[in-house]
Image (cartoon, rainbow over all chains, first blue to last red; front, side, top):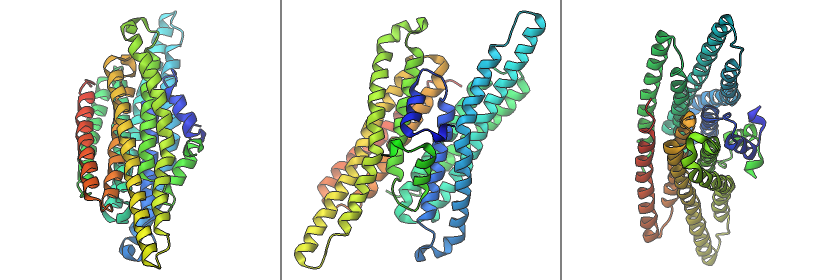
Length: 205
Length: 205
């Protein structure tokens, strides 16, 4: 799995002429890192007298961010797999009419999955961004810039994943499906930009 | 070195209650990933008939991005080391007046370094963002979203690093130095926001 690669190996693998891991997997990695940073700020807040009122909140963030970090690390592979499944569908036989029709269905289904996987990455990353908001607002002030970086990494994870949803929607023929996902994408996009702005204005330097 | 840690280990290390690696190191990692994505798009463009006019440009990006990836991977450690040097300076003896004065100088110098390291990360990351601009504009259109993610990762690398410059400037007493770096920070910040906007408007979906 990609999470078992070193940073050097992972970035080498991205850089190769293999289209995966690409932007979708990178988005998942970005948000996994964002989750870790939020967990760090929670760790640096828990047990500190000055932040005793935030103890319960920070312990919650500690748990949640660890959970989301693990989920996102697995999504690095899931996104690349979804892309490979689309590529495989294209390789299906297309001699007879029956084969052609079967192949089209295979491609369409695989492409829907390749849109849904990054949509999930975006949704989970949005939860991570919400954790970043809390650590910036209520966490140890010495680590406030770490919370800011967490928020921006999650933002890039979300918007990056959404680009990967949109590029796949371009090949899907089920118009109702496309419109439904487009709306979801737009909503998350707008929420993300607003939330990032809101978080970063809390850092007054 | 951090680049020899697996993604799982690296994110665990971030998440720990040790303040390093924190937002500065993460910013360097984000930009190293951005460099890899730009290199991937260049790789997917080189040798393609349709993009024969871009062959020289893409080969240049291939070389440059590999170089910048390596430099940034090393900066993950450099940023954490710079932070640790500040912590060590605080541990210097402070019994006599001479010791106190020496300690103050040590802290001030270490803090200047802890501001300069992320400033360098930001500057190198800006070069990476410029490579992302070229791959989005001239690279293989099938990988345009990878270029977009590269641009956003570099943007987060830059702005994240600049937060780490600014938090350190807050502890530096040399007012002339502070003002000079603040101006640099502001310039890069503005250029980065404009460049990201410019790149993303090139992606019309």
